[in-house]
Image (tube, rainbow, N blue to C red):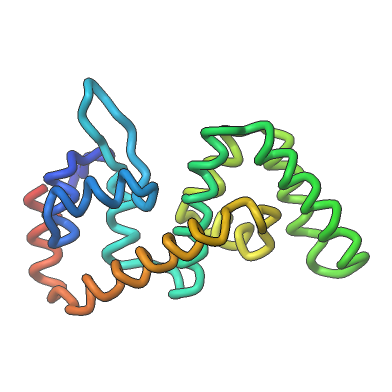
Amino acid sequence: MWARVWLTTGEAAVLLRSSRVRVADLCLRGLLPYVTISSQRRIRRCDVEALIAPGMSRAQLESLWLHRAVAGRLVRDPRAVLAAAAINLRRLRQMHPEGRAWEWLDRWDAVLDQGAAAVLETLTSSAAYAVELREASPFAGILPEDERRAVLAAFAESRRDRARLMPRGKFERVLRSV
């Protein structure tokens, strides 16, 4: 079955069993990544599906939400955010002079060296490599505490919204219809 990569807010709302207004709100708060094409929002199917049936633990999903908010900061001020991450990496290396942590710190160094686009991809991706990298994130302190709390509250609210599980058959029918 061929599935479109980019969805409209209406199609995302159907998949999320939500309203278009709720999807637009998630987008505007930076909690659901999107692009604008001809003044209309388009959302990656994989991001919507990650909200429906996350292959991540609750803690990993929470981290993804926080890092997507960091991505918003990165877009607004790339030099400042990348500089802060580099400083944090140096501190982490001093705190962990040897051991397994260095592997992840080296990977973050490589991502930071590739520039803002690579960092954005790592911050917002639900791919396994990005999930693992975010566990040793150099982006602590980027979000002000009030913004961090707002993201965590929105994450908790999104979890309450999806408390009812959709039967597998119905989920597959919805996916085929979009």
